[in-house]
Image (cartoon, rainbow, N blue to C red; front, side, top):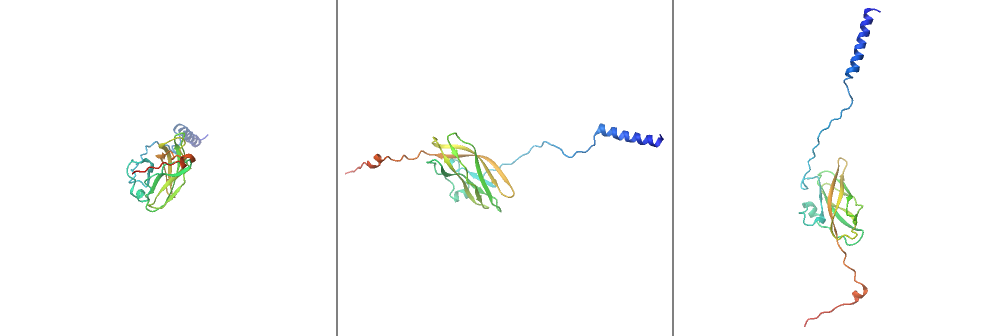
Amino acid sequence: MTVGRRLLWAVIGAVVLSALVLGTGGFSTASIDRPVAVTVSDHDRSLVTLWDPGAGGDGQPPKRIASAGLNGEDPVTSDGQTTRIVAVQNRFSDRSITVDATVEESPPSVDVGPFEPVVLGAGDAGALRAPVDCGDSDGPVDVTLEVTASNDHFTGVISYEATVVCATPDPTPTPDEASTTTETTSG
């Protein structure tokens, strides 16, 4: 074996040995933990505004929601009655959004949904409506919703607590009660 071949084999051995000990020095992916901060704005500044018309005295609705007549909720007085659960305003200035909701949590006796999705044009306000069965509940009942707003460029999902107003229906008078009347006169 000549000196040139010995030197060549020594160089090849050194390269192989250094590659085994040190690795290749390259990689195709990396995983890095970085904190993520998301700024949440109040309703007056958000691009999709939600307001609970059943909450009663929990503040004034945003102006566009109030001007659209969405600042109140009819009490649920019959099983399956469809009512406005959440008022929504699209504050995007140049695109429409589709808004839908599902129930995450509600009292066992209350059944809400399915919701009717609503499409809102730029700047428009509307309502998420759903049939409600209050069961044996009476008065305000809190339900937790997952509200999804989306268009071609974004999808936003928020967990939102809304109040459903359950009311005991006025009793229907029996035929005996309906035919019995009391007349009062004053003289």
